[in-house]
Image (cartoon, rainbow, N blue to C red):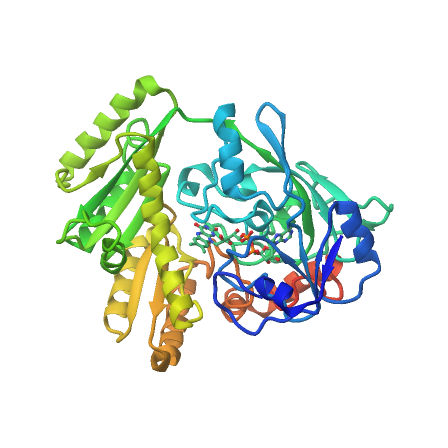
Length: 472
Ligand SMILES: Cc1cc2nc3c(=O)[nH]c(=O)nc-3n(C[C@H](O)[C@H](O)[C@H](O)COP(=O)(O)OP(=O)(O)OC[C@H]3O[C@@H](n4cnc5c(N)ncnc54)[C@H](O)[C@@H]3O)c2cc1C
């Protein structure tokens, strides 16, 4: 086990992609095995924060004292059997995807940031553009090895319900508390997942690094689609882009059945223009769509169906981009990834802590949400960029205020939260709550919800030593 207390060694573990400042820790501990980790924790009393790859956007891996445990040595990939893969938590999405290419198997969740670790993906229940069709990280987790902050270890498989006790290797057991709280039905990454009769496994996935430590993960895979038909459509009017989305969603699924529907507003396109010079000058919005093609023989038909549909909707095909092969598919994904990457880079450069929304609403409020966002942002004085997952009614608005405008931007963000909650939405559909959105989360679940969630935390992390300062 590596143990380091020098400040220059600790410094990289005090950061993530949120630019949140003020993290501090006494020591970084890097175990070689899960047994070593468990033994270490049995004799430890300090607060513990788990470090993944540091791509999180909510400061949840930034410690507020105590020790950082980095699982970077647990980074092995093992293909188990057909359709399953066993990975260490430090394996990155990129590494897993490359490993799977020659196998013919496919791991569908594709959070935009492929340098994230799978342990981090589980802790945040990460999702991505293809989650619209394929679902989120949770839907592909079959089994985990888990260590509690007190060093107790267990293996969790699908099918172990919260109505049964959770048993540990040392013979001890934990009973799920009696609570009324239930998670919202829309795409959601805010707070613990709670549904009647759910699996224990689902409680730990998306728990923001506060309930347990994933030390080994078994993921379900699906056969790799032969190809993807994809394109980027450009629009003169933002509204025309928004109006196309409900039409796509309600069209004949045998023909038009996208796995991704991603939005870029005018300001996002302006940021991208320096790298992608061929974005049409008049573009006010863009939509990236992608449909999986299971068998190559159907590719032509899928593409023809899209052309026909878009022609009928009077979309200007001349200005649009259509992928001609895997290189273009990758380029379109880079195009999507570059928006948050450019913004995060700009925030780091000017020393701005991330201020952005990650909210989603039920389907019926999609157009109201878009009108509300646009009108509210246009009436404000500061720069912003809007992009995100149209398929799930899940948009990211990144506020880019000058230092003097920071309070006003925060106030506006607060107002937006109130409206989204009125529509039954969530304050985080993707990134989790961490340290940055606790105020919004408290508003979303109310005092009784918080009480119930604290009861859950108390069972597994009674002294609040794991992921202290996150979520609750
Ligand atoms: C450019 C960019 C684009 C992004 N796009 C997306 C996106 O499309 N979708 C999305 O969901 N997110 C996105 N993110 C956010 C981020 O990539 C995810 O939240 C990711 O899951 C974090 O993984 P990580 O390994 O970097 O975790 P970290 O940031 O290191 O940690 C995140 C949380 O996970 C906990 N944790 C890490 N490993 C473990 C473990 N083994 N056991 C228990 N807890 C653990 C940490 O304690 C912390 O609470 C994006 C980020 C960037 C910078």
